[in-house]
Length: 284
Ligand code: NAP
Image 1 (cartoon, rainbow, N blue to C red):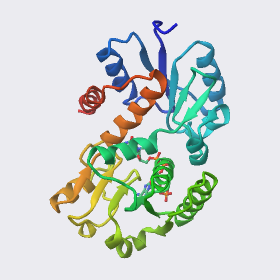
Image 2 (image 1 turned 180 degrees about the vertical axis):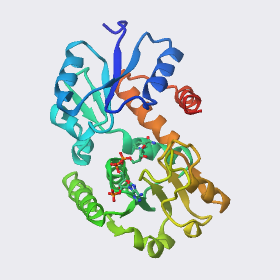
Image 3 (image 1 turned 60 degrees about the vertical axis):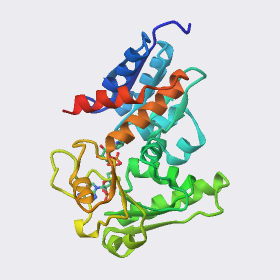
């Protein structure tokens, strides 16, 4: 069975923009594995059939992207972090139908790759959507002090509440610190921030001149991480670099979330350099 070629896939709607096929196929080729990765457009109402169908067809695993990550939770046996995040981006079929969320760990590894640790640091996350949720849970779990800043304050409040609840269920309450603010309070909170993360779509192609906070709030001591990966160097990152801040781009997170999925599926060490090069080439 192990020498058999396996099929992997990303499901989403739309799906044409996904970098995952290029990234994972480069990894399979580089390791001399016969496995292949495809993208399928799947409507939310067909997701259940698609997941069970992939299992029945002997697929190795799946990734889920917009708008299927939350819906997928209904059809899998989720790991504790994915269950608390409320969304699944990776499914493994080797032992039942197991669900994971590798977005948060991908973001964490992107920081670690730049020599940045999260424990006992103050992390301001701008955004409270799907990606921000995964990052907030993972970073709070890893001991960061979290500030969630969002345009819709109610959504930030709900995320802060969910993270607090989720972490206490996991028995992680000792040093937990999490609060929510509106965008108008970023200015008064940024002086105490060590790590600033843009987890909104602001700055993404085609709106590349947009920036989620006024550039004069950026300073050299900040680590600035933008999860937007198209373009790779967003306005936020270029303005941060100008001011001497350490910057990390969204391609790093994309590669690390994919690498983590690859580990879960294959048990092998993913060739991250090859995966990164494949993504960068495809983005050009
Ligand atoms: P989402 O669930 O739709 O959330 C979007 C977030 O952006 C919300 O917090 C929204 O605020 C905020 N937002 C949108 N337009 C805004 C504006 N003009 N001003 C202020 N805030 C605005 O999306 P998502 O899935 O979290 O994805 C967010 C971004 O991350 C996308 O660009 C996506 O491509 C990227 N991403 C990257 C990776 C990676 O691996 N690098 C992984 C996942 C996602 P409201 O709540 O007020 O609407």
